[in-house]
Image (cartoon, rainbow, N blue to C red; front, top):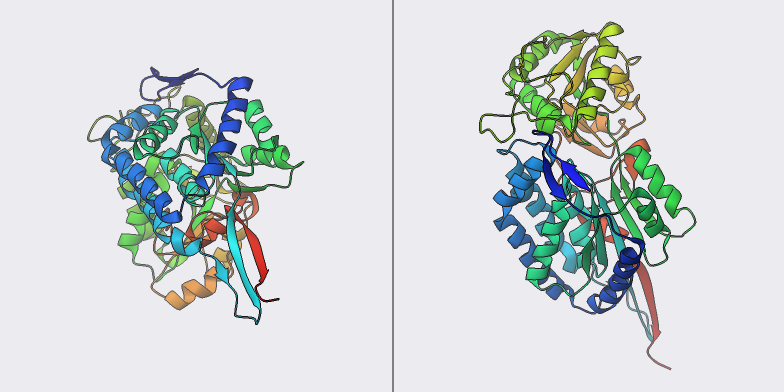
Length: 460
């Protein structure tokens, strides 16, 4: 199999899909490795994981160049996925593991000793996407291993080198053999792994359709799944928002990584009193992007992952315009935008409504609709009018109002004056078609372990 680079259509990686025999062997090894690993003290697990993370961070430039070739993000931005988000999440989860995994000791009771232990689940299958392959995978890989599980990692076939780099780092860090493995496999083979009794937990990041596939495969077994799926994340700009910083953050939240993020801002609701200056400032800043070859140092917007993905966004834009929306960015403003290629200019759509697919269905590209609203109640109604609920943001100087409104918005994470960011100390979760389960934070360890009660009569 080959990975085709969105930069120029060249082959940037080659790999083989695992055979049935290879998958069988990998599962057997994972079971054996986990039995050894669970006996290793948490402090020693932490030391090993820290070494692996440090090795990957030290190689961030090389890993980032590979990543840019595989999925197209500008080379000036790719290193930060590893140096910032990947490192921050990994280190946080390592640092809290000792406390999060400690026995829960109950109040004393005469003649008894009672506590609840966090028992590792066993073999964890991690299915990671291409858009942020290091960020999405680290949410599960590091805490799963820290909790005493073994991990089999399958990343998107668009970014296969990511899994290899994990393997190299863990091997050099001295991880117990077979505690971490990676492979590439077909969808049918992955479904077969999920149905296999040796797999005890599945962590999946990807599309709603993919999440449904994981659920179907797991339906005959009593195993848990963590599903981080689609998003149509909204932002609400109140009349008291600091417009300059709000615009700067929302332009970045909509168009960073060409909008290819599950928590990118895809729809905006702006109070009518500030709608016009917001649109003017937002469009002016959007026009400052430079679309082009992501290996060039002055490029700030690279290609989408493939031409079909760009064509999907083009179709949403065209459909909205046909229904009455106005596309503010005119053809020709971004010369690198060429039909039949993955290079797509950012687009701002006004005069939109919720009868348009661009305001209700995931876009996953550099296009955003902006709609005027009259008050908080209308904004809340619009934000909740979605099948998704991963993140949502409010932009205001009134913190109490932000909390009050946030209580009414159906979402996994509620932001005030920021967006498109994941704090590892907070639970990462979604509602509705944005998924189920939880990763990161102390709660993330609960998902990767099972409680085991010890009820000990110590006096006869």
